[in-house]
Length: 509
Image 1: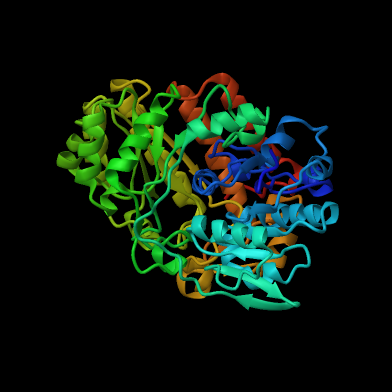
Image 2 (image 1 turned 60 degrees about the vertical axis):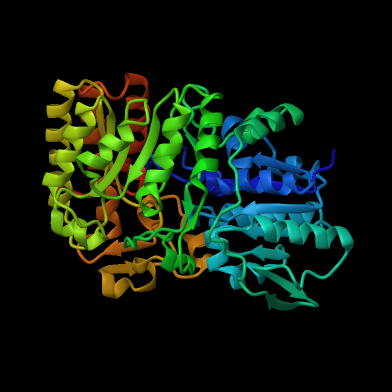
């Protein structure tokens, strides 16, 4: 069956720049290579919503397919496709070059097939993106399911998309910006992994449908969507309500979300992650709905701050052992507050004691690149993580893990740091999409970052990151949290950043 919509997830880089780039450190704390194979969960909600309306969708994770085969010809792959519409995600800014390059290939191979881009970065830069001759449409906003259906119906009918909400398009060469009128507060979406498996079989394309191919099948982290937007406004994050232009959080019905999680758990031996702190909207209803369904495996919850004993016990009452992710960002409480997380180490440590005492697991993340942070401060954060991991893993082996990284390679457009760099303590090296494309094509990661802080230059951030991440690898391996195979893989990423060919590490300070 010819799909109406083919969703393409681009690599970070295509062609010669990808072969020359030494960016592995940029993805060292996520389950991805430097090509960033994760496609946004919006691909799954789009597929389900569009097909619910009687149209056919195919997902092709081009980044994962290229990572799985050096011989894969991206142009040859595109040449064999014939959809009504190509949809390319430009969600994360790291795909600035790969998404536009993929659009160019689509248009060269199929000049008669329209190309649409969507995602948070495409939305932010919609006027710059639509100026490209390779792009026909930009679907803006964090919720594009209904606008995409409306656009496909218009294309089927050969009609002008003047009534399609959230759409930026061209009429006789002139740019038209339709109102951003579709921003639902109650999200009518589903993340349906069963449908994804059916598509793998239908198109005989397992890797092309994988959310990420980096660690599959050794490990697959399965996520669902609790909300769109965020009530917090952390310095470098572009996912806040303010950055997205939302007045209120977009949320899902707790009963529907709990049912979806239960269905997902039947398909996988791994935990199901719920990104976004559920305390932002009716947590008691979701906890009750999950408790009734008696999940068989752990659920992974993200907390933007300490939960306290009462709330953590409520989470634990769902059934399986707790799996909690928290980002204190720094051991320094003042730096943590400057970033947007206002709580003490005492409250953090009380939570860790509660989580582990209830038989759960916890993961804590530290950030490099907060204004006011120095090399010595980064080292002190690693030392703080060392004290926590050694203490708690001696008592509860394998139950507390940690990591550290800068927000590599780019801070988000729309974030406070991006919009007000001088006021927040940052200096930016790129503002436009074209400038970011030029940065990501540079082989040395020290010249790729789009930011530095008032206290650390770009090269310093990369160098101290390599040092801190190397120390963290050794610590995690010593505590039994990282197997030798994966530890060596992570060390290889760090070595690449330290090699003279990558710019050379500056002298320790």
